[in-house]
Image (tube, one colour):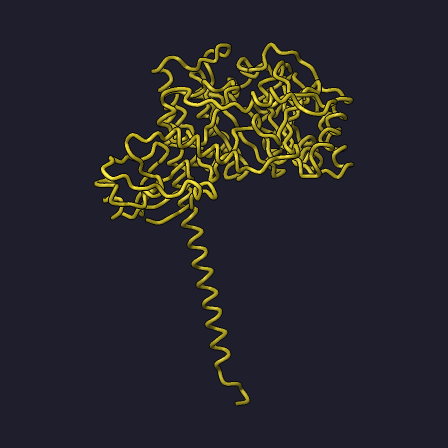
Length: 474
């Protein structure tokens, strides 16, 4: 058995090797994903983060009598039939939380420059909320808040809205003040991309230190223009956004295309994927992923029709396969670390600053659940605790899902119902694809290291040979 990735330390050291239980019947832990490669069988443990390769011979043993490979028991790949995998995972995560360094400064800021937008998407979760821009005074206070609470550490800013570019001057104002105070920063953005013209791209690259932007594309030209329903008339918004994506890529800014998918645009999005590939072929900074939309936005109950959901998931897989084939797919299923948190909501180093200066922990909570204000010191500790409360086992399928250790859903998360019974199989499929890519990269690295050693050995041999040659005078 060959180790491709070591288990995460120090957590695995605290867990220790599992003791063999005499007479017990063993099974794979639910968090282990397996996939065949040319050299044998890869096993990835998504709780301990260890990945191993079983040779062809070991694979045969594994398929016939896995307990004949005791190392799989030692490292928790195999567990007794009655083992509570979810309980162990929660304990493992709690250890990671306890050992995580305490964060004393705030270095992650999601800044809502406005809650207004130049599009009118039917699925927007901000529909019905007040449309208000951040004022220059609040922007100045926001900059001062960052300067005061970052502790001199580099800062990461995500510009958010509404549409953040709908109030573009605020971004420049905050960035200019941070530069004056010698605060190092870089930024990302969630945007529809409509206002990201060539001039704005230059400003974003040079002044805002923008390195990544997420742009939503909901279909080909006709579908996109209908769904986005921009306030501008007589303009081909789809083509304008595509041109702006080109400007961003030319400036070496990473572009992540989010495709919201439902039964009405699934086939359309496959054509969008092809068009993106044709327009921006082989651009390393272009990435894309799909996201399932809810049928009932207000109740957030998900897609209730089982047949329809399965058809949609199949269409989504076809799109993802094309994205993967063309090197565009950017939804990594495997993280090589044990996460001590879920997202910004339970991260002490992150806050969301709203247009009116109120602070929350999640961009989905703008009209309520405030934890403070940029004009005040301290937070509402009761509300902070609310955002940290964990939720587990939302559906029965959670207990058998390989993603469970890295999912860690918070009770406050409004997206907790986004999962469906079919998703564990989907997550496993995505992880299998990634395992193959990780193994391929591992083999490439091994080959490069071997070639480097061979070159060094040859160089040393030549030096020895040169020294051993008799001198011309001799």
